[in-house]
Length: 68
Image (cartoon, rainbow, N blue to C red; front, side):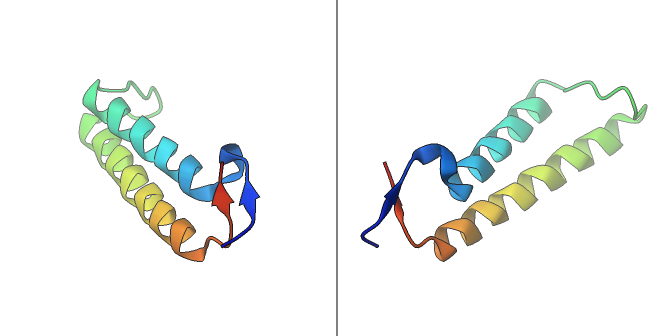
């Protein structure tokens, strides 16, 4: 891994940002007007967190350049 790229082009960084945003939304009870059932909203936020966390892991494993 010799090449570098800006941090904002990193899939790992963006997936991590989505993971944190979903976790914070879940923590503060993010209101989603399309869904009336709080359990559905919670499940969706947990699924987004899990998927973006996996995307971050796979993005890091597939990375071929460092970020700066």
